[in-house]
Structure formats: structure tokens, C-alpha cells
Length: 264
Length: 257
Image (cartoon, rainbow over all chains, first blue to last red; front, side, top):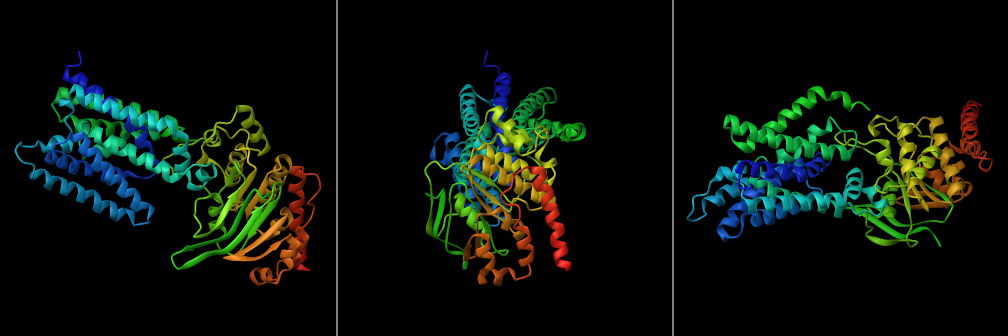
């Protein structure tokens, strides 16, 4: 039954949403949007290196995303002007990745698959990787939820409760790298950050607690996957961008009609 | 043994020496207030005690397993983060419902549990911060200018509440304050900081110290004397509240005389 490509695509989208919902909420709360972008763009460089070194693409993206995420959070603790630094890192990583891919010998590489995802070509083993990675991230975030939330509110409040805000930041960095690695196949390097931010931002308008927002982001992410795939099926649009478009449509609907619940 | 003690703490940001050889300690059940001009290193010292800032030299020792409650000067909650009062109180611990109900009652925030944190008034917000700190069942409360942004009656009520909490729980209190009047009436010991400890001791001793006068001038002397009232009577919140308003009038009269 799992060799139906559409079903595999749906499962891939829902699997990603399970991790991207809660992680994306933290990205929004901590204003890490550009941070997510830089890490996602670095994935292209990871793909290039993986192809050159003949190692699995997921491994290559994971290592490079981890390196980038680590570098960025290290820079941020050293008080660099983050906006410009992240802009430089983000676009340099993307450009360098595209240049590096042109050096990959032999096989012609389908660039758009890495930039925009190839969810309709998800294999059974891809599904294992996606659900494994997403499950790992969701479990990690659930385990440290209260600590992460306290550290997000204030370093001092966290310290008074015996929580090391730097360690919790590292947890998020790690989770981000894993999500980037598994999301590459689903929506591609250019739109990973969108799948983190848009469902969470949409859920904000409907939620009264952090937990509700995270779960809402999962639901909206999953709904966007279904909606985007349906659109792709009926209108023959590219699947990855269609999923993000569906998420954006939900965001607009919530912004227009969900205002009521924002009142305290 | 002290609940927490800093010895010879030195902190520099680049070229600037923020704290230079600072010693400070809080004993169980004691209210210690830190005063000092703006930029004198008060908040940095709090961060050192909390363990957020590592001192370049010196050390901070705590009794083993010290439970800390911390009330920050202010807390910015990002608009993107939905947070009810009830959720905030249960962060990161999840205290029993009866315990929460009791603390909510003590701090006078009953009925606010379902409200969003960002929708609270300044006074309500500070009480919620205090309630959350108390839910940690702290042996030591650290408060950084906890009444900033409150009007005078609100401020008096906050300190009255704090005094009651100290009496009921026996917690030590380390508090940063810029309000010299209330400080003198609410503290057992005052520490005056200007990058180093200028002077320390009972409110009377500090008030008369030349180092303190050099920093804060003589102008407040009369007000301080008037404000050192009703330290040890019964701590009924309403009563204290009234008497502090009364105190404010006395100060004005004094000023005009």
C-alpha cells in the first residue's frame, strides 16, 4: 500500500509538520527566522559535498546544517551584529553550494529537486529518514519543553530555576539541523524556513498558550501538506511550493478571521 | 551559613570595570537591599548571583540545593508567544493545584489566571512574577527593582506583601531598589554599591555613612527618618497600605516645613 507515491508524499508532509510545528514555534518566539534560513541554505552546500564525497545526501546536509547552525549561534553569543552576519552567511552558503554542485562529476544533478523539494519522489527509505528525524526532534522538544520555554522567556529566569539557557539554545540548534536535513526532500532548501515559520505564525492567531500554538502549527502544517499536494495533483503545480502556498493561505485566513481569539 | 555569598567578585565588560572586589552575603530570613546609582553594577551583581554572568575573579557560593526565586526588573514577553498567567506560573515546575491556589491568594492575583500575560497592568504583572518566584518554594528570593513602574500605593503594597512572605516562609531576600524611602523601612541590611561596596550595614548605619551621603546627598535624610516607621507591627496588607500613603503625606509636609 505504501508504494502509492501520493500516500508517501502525504506521509512525508505530515511527518515534517510534526517536527516543524513545535520547532517553528520556537523559531518565531525567539526571532530566529533568518537563523533558520541560513541553516536551510547551507543544506545546498551539504548536498554538493555529499555528492562529491559519495556519502548519503541526508548525512551531508545534516553535517553542514549542524556546522552552520553551530557557527551562527556561536556568533550570536559573541554579540556580533546578527542581521548582516546572518545575511552574509545565508546567501554565501547558498551560492557556494550552487557553485560546488556544478563541480559534481558524472551524473547530472537535478538542482530544482534540492531547491524546491521532490516530495512526489519520496521513497520508502526517505519516509523512514523523515519520520525518524521528525520523531527524534519532536521527542527532544517534548522532553525539554518547559526548560526550552523558560529559557526562551528569559536567561535570568531560567538560571534561577537551574536551567542553562545556552544548553537549551544548543538543543534548538541541533533540532534545527535535523529538521533541515529531513525537510530537504519535502520542500527543498529555499522553502524549509517557510515551513517552520508560516504554520507557527498562523497558529499564533488561534492559540492562547504556547502548547496550543505548537500543536496548532502541527495541524496547520499537516493541512497545508494535504492542501498543497491536492493542488499539485489537480492543477499540476510544483508540490513543494504548493504546500508552502497552502500554508500561506491558511495564515492569511487566520489573520483575517482569527483576530477574535487574540483578545485576552 | 549564608544562603548565598559572593566573595571578591570582579566583572569587566571590555575596558569597563563593572564590579570590583564585591563581597555580599544573605543570611536565612534576612532582607538585604542593594542600592546604588544608575550604572553602578547592581543588575550585574544580580546576574552574578544568579549564575548568568561568570565573574572574572572571585566566587559565588550557595548552600547545597538552594532553591531560588527570582523576580526580574521587567520581563519582555514577545507578542508572538501566547502565555496565560496560569501557564506562566507553572513554568518550569508544575506545582500542585492547591499550592498554586494558595500563592495566587497570597499575592492577590486570584481571577487573573486565564488572562494573557501581555494584557496585565504593571502592578498585576509584578505580582504574577512574585507569585511564580514563590511557587519555587524559595529559600532565597532575589528581586531586581521589583516595583519599577508601580505607583506609590502599589509599591507600598508590594513591599508589605514581601515582608509578609518573609515572615511566613522565612526566606532570605536580596533586593535591588532605587527607592531609598521604602528601602530603609523594609530592610534589615542595606548594601550600597558603586562598582565596589561603598558601605553596608543596618539602614541607620548606611544612612549616616559619608560614602552614602556622597552618592545620594543629604536631601533625603528627613524623608528616610519618617519612612522608618511601623517596621514591626502586624502585617495586615490593607493596614500597611494605608499607613504608607499616610507616610507619603508626612513626607510632603516635612518638605514644606
